[in-house]
Length: 172
Image (tube, rainbow, N blue to C red):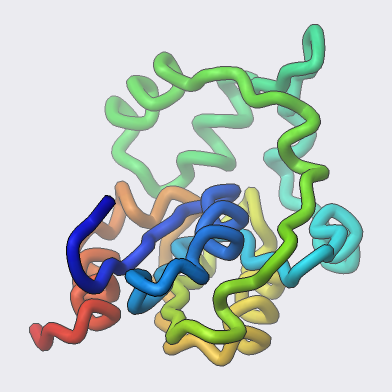
């Protein structure tokens, strides 16, 4: 519904969404922030299994087909690098995620045809930073590396905003 060129930005699992929907003609660029970047039809769980799992996984709690991170795992590993009070608020508003969500596969990969940018989080303990680097290289993305955990968009907002502006064609 956006008029004119649109930059899609995604964090974490949201990379799956922009990989699928980013083929829309209005989409001018894709920005991945410590995000998945699946290829069409790819088993992303199998791909990520080729890289060491982060310690956050030990804190995943499953109940009735949904997952949620334990408080300890969320604060230590998911929100590492985020100011503690802010991390506690983010934990408090965490919503459960359907287990089935993570096994879904895309039918297309917009990054094959759209310019892409990627912010690798060097201290990420949720998505392995080497997997992030692999994804960024595979999509031939303009890449920045941040000394940040998984929530770099919270702990490094200026750097992420600058990346989005670069994707939109604006200079700092």
